[in-house]
Amino acid sequence: MAYAAWRFATRRGTIPAGSVPAPLPRVSVLIAARDEEAALPRCLASLRALQYPSELLETLLGDDASTDDTAAVATAAMQGFEGTFRLVPIQETMGAARGKANVLAHLARQATTDFSSSPMPTSRCPQPG
Image (tube, rainbow, N blue to C red; front, side):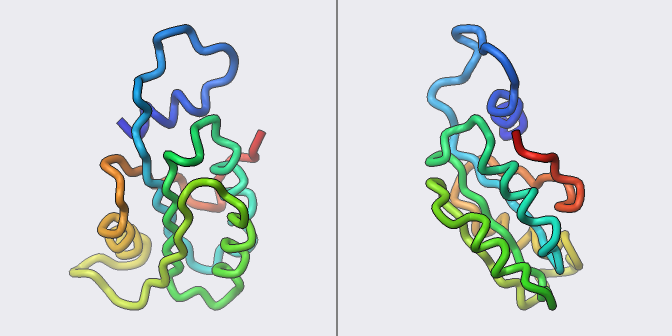
């Protein structure tokens, strides 16, 4: 369902009447990041540019012990976002999960919606617009 909502939100052109589900679901976007200060502005700008109601988006970014300015860059990039944005410092391992899988496991537990999506690696996020 999250994929379908994303497809509706990012489709270009006129949307035929009746093709968008009503009501639209609240969706959580889970982002695992470690030392991603260079890629995050583009990735988060793409999320902000979605043609989906901001108030229905929850963006959770897990900072996996970054040694650069990932947290500060993410916070600045999401300043003024009308949806929910939370920066979650990841400081422990959950079960056998490691790396990005560990971060996503933490974020999935904190997500407050019924639908979640983990976008592509931040280095591959599309340009907004």
